[in-house]
Image 1 (spheres, rainbow, N blue to C red):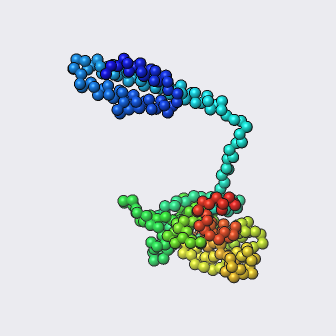
Image 2: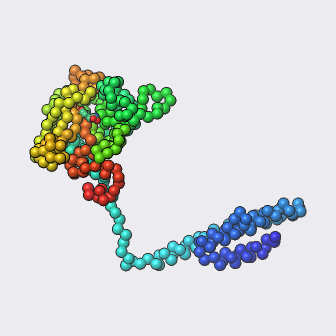
Image 3: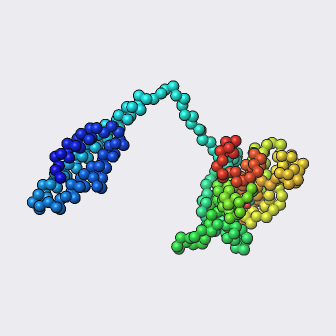
Length: 341
Ligand code: DAH
């Protein structure tokens, strides 16, 4: 095959190309696996040995020429396309409306609650979603035989080789008590929002993942009335100034005494309806005075310090506040639901 005529055809073919797509097709013709250049170089072994070097050199020159021509043409065509687009803009066309994003209702409720606690002097702290069994249970005075430690109530993880103790997806934000108190000395006041995980079957009021906000305050003279005052400020801010609150004695391993906190039903104002199960009260959170064993875990002197702690489910608060009946709505990403907030 002679090289000279190929060069000429190439020149005229390239000149005739009018679009990037046509250029791409021509590229395949010359540089493709079965293209002109491949055929040329495929001939080399059939030539007499003394002609091979010269022929190879020419084929190589041709290849470089092809590459340069294609690059130039490509640039020229791209430039044309831009120029064309510039002249074809129709400034009378209506614009494309940009949808502004907004925070998810769970995030909005977290921000609102944390904002209220921040105004009372609490710092907002992050925790780990992957936790040790120690921070989730042992350090919080939860005994080995406690049912919440069972594998059907907690997601345990495969541990890295050489790890001490078990790892898990935290089942409560109370872990942040251990983390934050181990890192800071009193006085300390913290709220910690975040995700928690439990292997619950999903239904209208349960999910394998939901959000909690943990709060606690420790100093030399913190009392149960501080807890009541702080929680009343929070509950009235979220649910309205006219609600009533009550503390019901309860048990949590990491607080003593412990209480569950109810607000008067925001639907029936305490008379009894289907939302509050005719009780007139809605449970909103768990709380209590921090157990001396927790102080021992984090290296605080239980004789010197006292403190309170509380923990609430964010989805539950949002459901009560906005009258949402199904927790699954929060994670289905249905904009018809989300846009209402
Ligand atoms: N961690 C508890 C739970 O997930 C909630 C809770 C109750 C947190 C009492 C507290 C507390 O700090 O004092 O059910």
